[in-house]
Image (tube, rainbow, N blue to C red):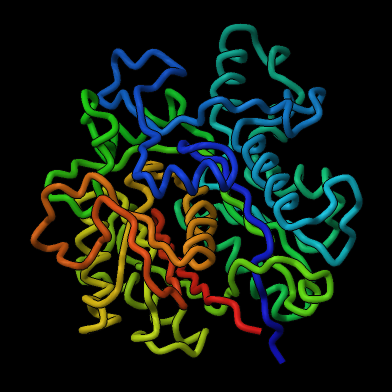
Length: 413
């Protein structure tokens, strides 16, 4: 029999702040974490804005001697995992053991380490390459460092499935616990690639907003005047536990995870198919996995990237899956405030989904000033909405046509 899996801890580092209190307050107030890029000279870049993490001190979360071994995406994962374990009331200075695992995804990994070490190679030859270069940049070292830090000796993996990575990590972890292969999983996503190469690559694709004079209005999902996504960064981590374990230790339960779907567009390396087929199938797979009818869903935390095709086609997919109920749902995109945090997005949005259920408040989509006629659902514009929320669906769609959907439920014993 499949075991029930609940969320008992939340950790988040995002352009809106560090920790759930700061992030939740910002989301409810419709604040925006996007501004001019400060990390490098953007003179020759068409896009000069991003959602950078502010006031992040790795010394708060990481032994100073280890910081130089970690790229930013690892540092963010360490911080969010520490916050999540503390929030769950679990020890951060004891070995979690072999019934605890770590599953943290990233779309890109350590771009800063790659760029810096390539410069060192060009300028000074191979002897200038850091001995920490490889472990600082490869995607699975976020999960690796977290497992070492907390003595989590169970399942350990790291999906690199672009913007679906965080959701795939959480969904796979849900299955691992449901099948009895672990009792607790530290799961989510992380990203830290606001670098010249990272921003320049997306600029070359013409994927990014160039609303450089109005950075806080640049991420505008479902708005007719959207002109591309805004890069963000950070990490979102959830603590998943077997229900009986959580009850035995009298843990606070934010929500239950009850469904997980995966699909592939099998269409194009960056664009979704014109009939939204992959998005339709992943949502249907998720609902089928949960045994939940479409009309039972109250809120969708949309992928909502602020790109022309995603927003239009995600809207189409929601209408195909939910029919008339699509117009009774609340939908919103937290990317309007955080920007698109790439491999971290699914983890960050899982944290937001769990908080939505806990507080029974739906966070808004900001900057929705001129709705696209093809985007005609209730996107919860401008202000939060208080309503009964029993089921939340969270979508993540990635380059290569890789899709994930998670379904969260209000916990009932």
